[in-house]
Amino acid sequence: MNKVWLITGANRGIGAEIARAALAAGDYVVAASRHPETAADTFGHHPHLTALHLDVTREADAARAVQQVIDQHGRLDVVVNNAGYPLLGALETTTDAEVRRQFDTNVFGLLHVTRAVLPQLRKQRAGHIINISSMQGVIGAPASSSYSGSKFAVEGLSESLQQEVAPLGIRVTLVEPGTFRTELLSDKSLHKAQDVLPDYAPTVGQTLSYVDQFSGQQPGDPQRLAAAIVQLTNEAEPPLRFLAGSDAVQYVPQALRHRLAEAEKWHALSVSTDFPT
Image 1 (cartoon, rainbow, N blue to C red):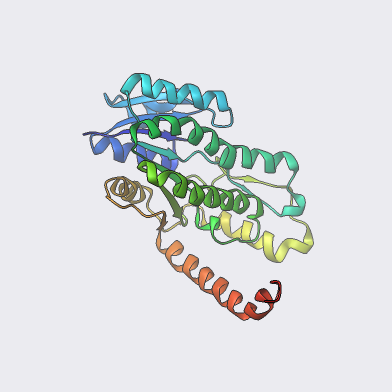
Image 2: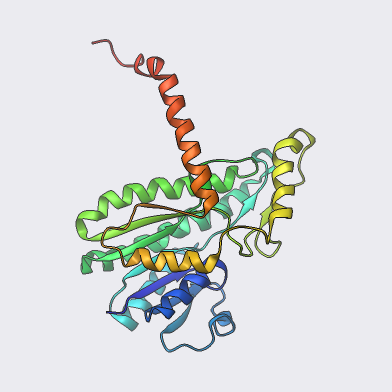
């Protein structure tokens, strides 16, 4: 049976590639974005495609969009929380408004959509929620305090959600991409906090300079990532976490080994905080 997909942030980047891959597999796709009028330019006219307006930061929008999917198709098989807001800059110079916008999209937007779909998925006793995280949802980096903070939040809520809904037949997968060749790092998408203070030049400044030079040179292929995500939805036991890209595969395990070594180094002091037995 052909699946029914709901994909947020589907008008460009990884979201658009996932939509194309799902359509190529013969599935039905509801491509949700703040600008659904661009869908014809992005995808052409496809009988299995529906373009839908959705601002994930508005809870009522999410509820309305999900109801439209159910009214049209009667079910929902795959939900891809892809909509995101990329912001880079030093924590000290990032404004409250910028951080809130980041979290409103990356965290609360994902929560709005997820809470909206769960009643239908529970009713079906089936469904697959795919949350697009990042390798920076596992490891931090200079200039990424706000972005990593939002993705760390996605990691924690997704891991807990998976334990809540697994007995109901609902699957959850975190996709942790490295750097993929989309517009994410371009001026069209990337937002930057204020000018870098001199004290942060060797850390934040260096990262921002690298990002400017690296845009368009990322090793990850969005089309291949989309194909991998479609494959994950066909697996009987999909992973909770899926690292995507050679850079993610290199850096994330390295960071986890360092974290484990640090825990072992401080083990004696850590256990000393228990009540004496």
